[in-house]
Length: 198
Image (tube, rainbow, N blue to C red; front, side):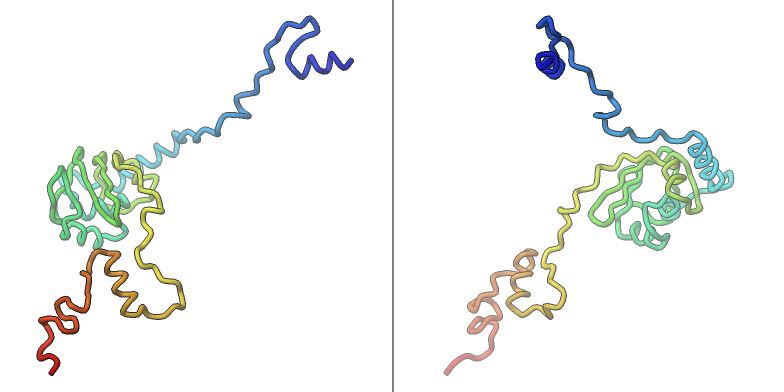
């Protein structure tokens, strides 16, 4: 009895030959697969994107398009990004009124990340995220990890204003300040100090 139990545990039959262990089902060990997009939902998103498109013969401004496909939060933010040189179409900086066409590569740099998309559909009205995803091909690099954006000089709540020493340390970390020693420009006894001792 004990030998039969031992044989069933080790995967051997009573004759001493090895038999294959029962395979675990793939459902138990495999990671859950991403759900397939619902064809009806995709068709509805495409229809909504086409409904938000311009009339025949009308142009779509770049600031309006990046706002409509949710690359920026407001249209004024899109215009400001264009004026600041943070929006490029086909490798060139553009003004807010630049007309965008299907097939253009649009790069939007904001908040330490660059989004790179290829225009698939032209729309003028802001749409939901599932509909917006049907209007471009996203070639953006993956976002950096959150640890990469730890702000320098973050102070604990309730510690009060930084002292002069704290401020100098923060400027040194950010690479803004020099040594600021006593013999430097503007320091005690430096050339920037008028007069001097007796």
